[in-house]
Image 1 (tube, helix red, strand yellow):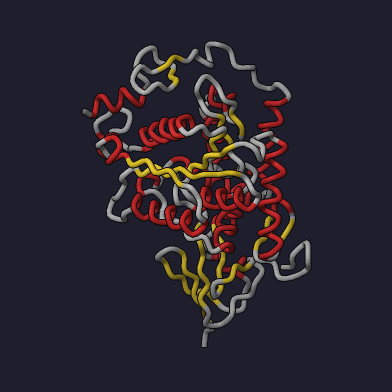
Image 2: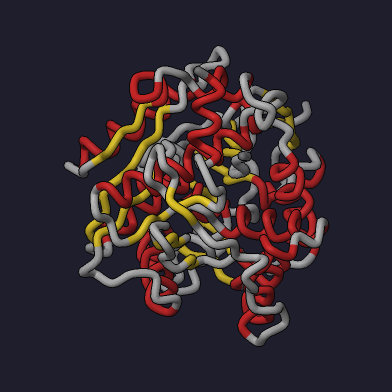
Length: 66
Length: 307
């Protein structure tokens, strides 16, 4: 069975493969690491962290317009 | 990734500095760096009174927070523009700003367009040529006018805004694409006081937007996450995205773009302002603020038209 996890950015949810780094997952989703902060269970994490099976990682968009 | 200072677990990777930091070291490093640049650029001294323009967003609240940590005398100014657009944008950002100030026992000035001038910004903009399609230009004009008015009326020495490096790089990119010479000459983290115009400073000019978001999250500061509904799809957002693509391929591209521009200016790459570029200022007969117009200033002309 495929091992997956969830990444949330604003109101969008993405299913990603567990076991790879966040950096790889962001590249596959075409999200620039420069434009987001990654949050796991309320803690900020860097993109070299490995995505664990079944977990949810929230991305906080950092770009504000105006 | 490990923290460069203590070897603990890093919470942020700043590729432009080739440095990751843990929570404690990052929260110590950022205000220290800001202090270094405040002093290097001679923005203000601990004896001076600072007015911080606060929008309820991450940058201005983080700026106010760091100024308090560093022991500066900083009061806030919130301008309620009356932007609703179905998400109560202004009222929510005002609530967050007031809660931030109350929790820290800080002094906050509030200007309310509707109660103070009898008209909200979206309505005002629709009635003017300047803001018929989008109110952003009128918004900038109103904010500049009111920030200067409050700074002057209450005797503040300096006005501080939360512009970060991404804001500055996007503005520089825009002005360069259009070869806006007069804007390029004026763009600087410190604008000296002049003829009734308060000194303006941007203490966050060296920090990426991402660092400011990390700071507010790590400090537990609640800020308005939604961007202004009128800013969605704006040119400045597009430029920020473009610059982030460049940054991704070449870490440090954004900071080099802006800081090397400042160095080039210092070395005389750009001509000094002439009297044609920096027009003589007069006093507006209605509000008493400086203006390049011979009669009413642009703000008062806009308010007159809306009556």
